[in-house]
Length: 140
Ligand code: HEM
Image 1 (cartoon, protein in one colour):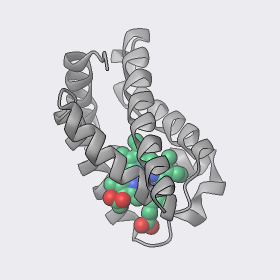
Image 2 (tube, helix red, strand yellow):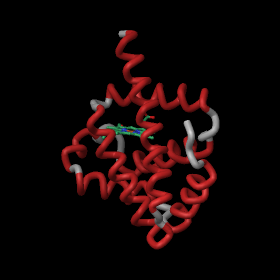
Image 3 (cartoon, helix red, strand yellow):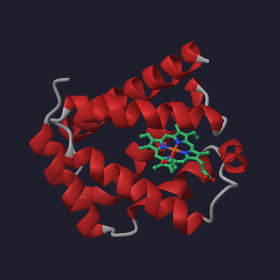
């Protein structure tokens, strides 16, 4: 995976400084643009979901150079997401909402280079989650 790790880390820090409630804003944008996703998120309170996603994103940003960890953790997460009713198409919704959130919060600091770096990172995360989902389904 050839990701611009320093750029991803520094921009993630910047957006969290500008908006500590980053994932709250993410869910607002996700549900505004993709209201059809709302009924999936019924298990946990919104606040809890925001915290779980924030922790997961921070962990991934911390481990971007740890390929075995990414394969294992994101693979397992992708398998769990199948049980939540998440389909491949929905990864597009989440990627769009995530990039829009980052761009909005980064404001004047957002550049085409950052857009490309985050699109590549999200694409890699999605691929690892989908690979885990397929492995779990094949093993059933
Ligand atoms: C970058 C990709 C994603 C990350 C890092 C992520 C992270 C998480 C985390 C940490 C959880 C908490 C439970 C667990 O650990 O399994 C979760 C639950 C969930 N995620 Fe994701 N997710 C991603 C993509 C998606 C996508 C594409 C969808 C589809 C809309 C989705 C829908 C859900 C749902 C429905 C739940 C269960 C919510 C509930 O318990 O009420 N996620 N996700």
